[in-house]
Image 1 (cartoon, rainbow, N blue to C red):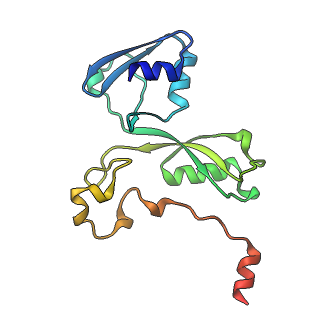
Image 2: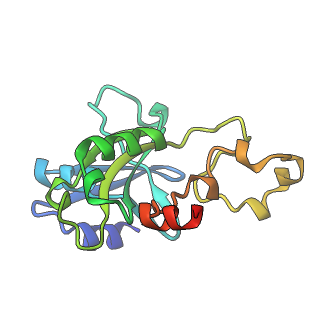
Length: 174
C-alpha cells in the first residue's frame, strides 16, 4: 500500500508512511502543497477500501482520532444550464451531506451538462447497524430485519433523475 500511494501521489518533497496499528497509518508530508493535494483531490482507495484521511496537530493520540468523514467528488449529470450554478451545487451537496466546494471552471459551460462538487459524507455508524459506505446490502446478515429500504442512510433512492423538458410534459398532458 505504501509503495502504491507514493507512486500515485508523487509528492514533490516526499512522504513518510508509518504503520501505527491495524488499518491505521500516519502520513508525514514535507510540503504543504503535497498534503493539500492528498487531502483535497481524493477520494483515495486501496484494495477496494476507501482511505479516510484527517489532519492532526500532533497533540492527539493517533489511536484516538475519529475518522468520521469521507470527502467525495460528486458529478450531477444532465443539469440544465440555468441550474449549473454554485448555489445549486451547494443545495445538492448539502442534501447529500456537507457541501465542501465546487469545480466552478465547468459551471455554465459543461459540455456534458454536469456539475462537479465535493461533499464530506458522514461515515460513522448509522441507526442501520453497520452504516458502511460500499456495504453490499444483499450480503448483510441484518438485511432480513430491514422492512423498508427507503429508511436506509444510502441506497438507489439517492440517485437523481434528469429533469424532463417542458415540451415533453406538455405533450403528455394533451
